[in-house]
Length: 494
Image (tube, rainbow, N blue to C red):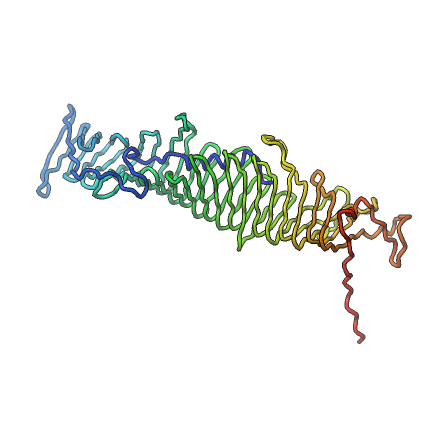
């Protein structure tokens, strides 16, 4: 009813991958935790020197009282107090910046960048690369895009390294496991990406996060790897791409993990979780994950009540809590004004639309018990075995008439403090009521063309005697009392 193991596992894997990934920021070795400044960097300006090469030719000129150098034929520039090396086809060196053109390579211990154009602003420690930008970090993560700005750590301007990439860059995050073995990477694409230190990454504008088994989308995303949280906003969705697709949508989706393992996912504002077997919809949906398996699903809301829909059943309540250890449904609890409907069994009679097409059960609380398969058995879906409605309970079920030749169903309507509906192979087998029971059992009118040969004569025809097998067991039902018949008002004489 809720979905298969593969769908929920794919959801768990993609979120765990996003939260557990190392953010491709720079300066990991010297960056302090979020909220704490790093050790102060030296305020000494960068000193960059043009290294003479065999084919290099240099021209200098004076501009505004300062010298400017123009170099071509292959350029090598080194900034020893920053441990930075710059290469390019040609360069312009000003007192406050270095500008390189053609086959540019920027290299330092924490970052390597190639591009067609690059400017290093030595006064405020900024590196701006443009056109065919490829950046690689020591952990194997990469950034590819049309333009990126790297802001180096400097006590005068910023406590941590930062990267701002525009023009819809692609960030590929390397994801080694706990043993250091390589795993399928995570890729993030957005109109703009901003990385602050080694913990915070933000994406805005048509965000797309993909893995080999799932994808997540939204208008913006915020990832904090230190706290192991992720927030997708403005039309977010998470979809598995396995054999059993799973989709989670809402206004905002938050994911939380611990020790690189996904623990909880919360979708707010018209949340919707959909599988091949069921859809769950409400203001808020919360999914609990343990060992990459979905073990619990909770839905609740005020403006949009919780609603679970399967191909044959619908359940609505203020809140719905699904307990599913080992990713197999065991118990479903619907609380406050719970209302369950299911399609009428048409194998033994022919319903008359629209009144005979739905069985229903309501109560303050409705609990559904399932006959879950053994752990690891994914070949069959859990089969419902019992529905229990408690508190102001009422039920209406259609059953086969005692007259086997009747085409219409018999109707069992019951009100009680508690109603228990038992199922056999997914079909209603028995309806038992307890505490202040009142109800009525109706047999269909006999076909006038048939001579039934049994029953009692009445003024309007023959009333058949119910089959004891279709009537609730009197040992479990305290009483079955016919409800008063509503008579039409008397017609006034004109």
